[in-house]
Figure 1 (spheres, rainbow, N blue to C red):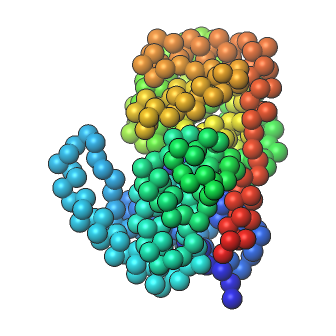
Figure 2 (cartoon, rainbow, N blue to C red):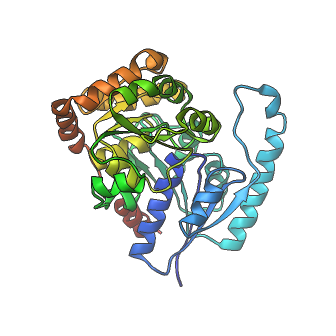
Length: 362
C-alpha cells in the first residue's frame, strides 16, 4: 500500500517553497506516495501549492497579531476550531507521517499527529528556532535544520543538519543571462539589479529604491523589482514609462530573475540565503529587523564574515542602499570575490537528503 504524508505550514515563500521541494523529492523516490498539504486559509500556500500540482486543505487559523491586540480576541476560538479540523483531516487521510515546515498550520497538525503517535518531522530553516517548533521538537521523530548548533533548541540526538531545500527549478537551472534578460524584456548590455524583499515585499527596501530610481537610471542600471502586494501600485506609478525597470508584486519564475541578475538586493531569510548560495550571486542583504531574535541579521552576518555578501542595516537603507548597490554593480572584482566565496556555501541536495531520511523512518 502506498505511503501517505501530510506536509503542513506556509505563510511565506520561505516556508512554502522548501515544503514543495521536499514533496517533489519524496515523489521522485516513491512515485506512488500520496501527499496532502495543510495550510492556513487566505494565506499564500492556498495558491502556490495547487500551482505546484498538490492538493491542499485550509485551516481557519491565524497567528498572534502584535500590532493590534484587539484582533487577537477570536484567536483561542480559531485555534480550537483548527484542532477540530486537523483531527478530521488526519482521520480521513490516515497519514504515515506529518512534516512541519513552519507557519500557522504546522503546530496543530504536528501536535495532533504526535498525540496519535504518527511519526512527525520538522524542518527548521532558520538559525533561531520558532517557539512552536521548539515545543514540537520534544516529541518529533527527526528535526532537519538549515544550520548547525541547534542543540539549544532541540534534543541533540534527533537533529540532522541538512541545509535548506532549494526549489529544483532554481538549483538545477541551466538558464543563461541572455535568457533571463529576454524573459523580462530588458537590455542585455546594461547591468541588472534584482531587488527582492521576500515573497511579501519589504517596505524599507521599496522606499529606498523608489527614492533612488533616478540614480539607478543615471548609472545606466536596470532593475527587476519585486515589491510585494502592498507596494505594487506605488512602484508601478513611479516606474511608469521607464523601460529599464520591470516591476511586479511577485516573481513566479525566480530562476529567470536569478539568471538575469548581476547583483541582488535581498532580505536575509534562511531560504533567500540558501537560494543565493546556489545561484552564486553577489548580494547586498538588508535584514528584516523584526524577525525573532533578529535572526535575519545573524543569517546575513554568517555570510558577511566569510566575505560572501555585503549588508546594510534596515534603519540605514534610505541613506546607503542605492549608493552601495550602484557601487557594487560597477565593481567587477568585488562581484567576483563575493561570488567565489558564496559558492562555497551552497547546498544543492537538502531536499533529497530529507526525503530519504523520512522514508527510511516511516
